[in-house]
Amino acid sequence: MGFWDKVSNIDRRWIYLMVAVATFFPMIVVMQFPVELTPEAVQLYEAIDNLPDSSVVMLTFDYYPSAMAETRPMSIAALRHMFSKDMKVVTVSNIPLGGPTIAEDVTRSIAKEYGKEYGVDYVNLGYRANYVAVMHGLATSIESIFKADFTGTPLKDLPLMQDVKNYNDIEFIFVVADNATIDYWISIVNAQYNIPVGGGVTAVVAPKMYAFVEAKQLTGLLGGMKGAAEYERLVKISGSATRGMASQSLVHFLIIFFVIIGNVAYFVTRKHEKGQK
Amino acid sequence: MRNTLPVIIAFLAGIAMVISFFFNPERTVLGTFQENLLQWVTIVGGFTLVLGVFSIVRVNARAVSRRSDGWFYKLATVISVFAMAIPSIMPTSANSAFGKVFYSIFPISWAGAFGTGPDSIYDWLFNYVDSPMMETMFATLAFYIASAAYRAFRARSAEATLLLITACLVMLWRVPIGEALLRGIDVRIPDYINMFVMNGFNLSVQRGIIIGAALGMASMSLRILLGIERTYMGKG
Image (cartoon, rainbow over all chains, first blue to last red; front, side, top):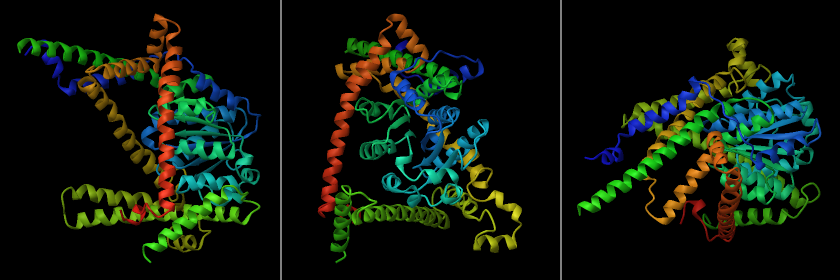
């Protein structure tokens, strides 16, 4: 067996080991790379930044824990941006597992840093089943869908919710999602109720969203961990997405290296096999 | 009747939603009806979750009682369902009727451990068990993708070569070192990738898929409204 045959049939555990090393190395030896901004991320930042201070915004936590590496930094950066402008934040989730709990943990910890009070400056509505019905229902009355917040406190006992009755009282909806719920935020809430919607999504979902950005149905887009790192740069923080860029850079390079080596080995061995025939 | 009644209900509910779309919910009877219907949908959605829990417990409990293959994992599933569910539905104060009875038996200091709020049992299990497990499962994908890229991503045809080159360019563009490298070759390359690949080829193809899916959804909705599509009743 020649060299390229061996390369072609390399034990996959060596590949796994190299991926692990490429992931962990930048975590041990701290490396940081400058993050360039895309027009879509800048558009989203400016949409929020241009809102008047103390505006009411909705932030959605439509993601499962599995996608938290990409989406959680977006939520954190968005909350920092909103709280730094004294905005009132209403969080909601269309994901039963994870979303409401992540919203509760993330929002409370960031709010504490900015001295924000629950019920006055922010509210976590939690989750209700069937997101299409929920999105339509919020248009007429939030209280008709959410009688109480995530912890069971009736909405009538929360001062913020006395001023926020439906979409008409919300200036902007920042959707952070790892699934198709963002399609419905666009097609129902933006298209039918004319509320500006911005999106932060996983890298897998992002390509589909470019069509909505171009159609101006989505006001700005953050795609994957890179998008989160861009927003962190825009709000001038160095969060987990910015740190994660080093690992992601090395792993991307490694995968490209694998693709090249794999193809070279494929063509050399194929040529060799043809020569033998 | 068992076949006709669900079709009639589906037709009337669907038509009512379509018509009420054009009316103001605050001013018209149809609008109010739409609002009520949407509330019913969320309530029915809640019941489907309960049904799901009931189903998962029944299927797995049966497998455990029969000691079928992998029964130990099924037992872990059943225990996990109850470990997450029971503490989260326990009363967090003595204000409710159930709470009064519960805390007349157990100390009120237990209240903080129940519900779904911060520092509850549910919150702890979510943050330290459920969330890390789901993240781990998802993270292992990176290893499989790397292995698949090495073994299967071959330039076997012109189309595959085009896909391969585009994928490598986008992968480079999406990370800071790659973007710096591309800028080093020509400062306009990253902008060109965004403009021509993501906002060009990708956008046009995605738009075609979105419109195609929307047309499919519209025709499926019509089929359901007219009673042609009956798979929701468990029938072909």
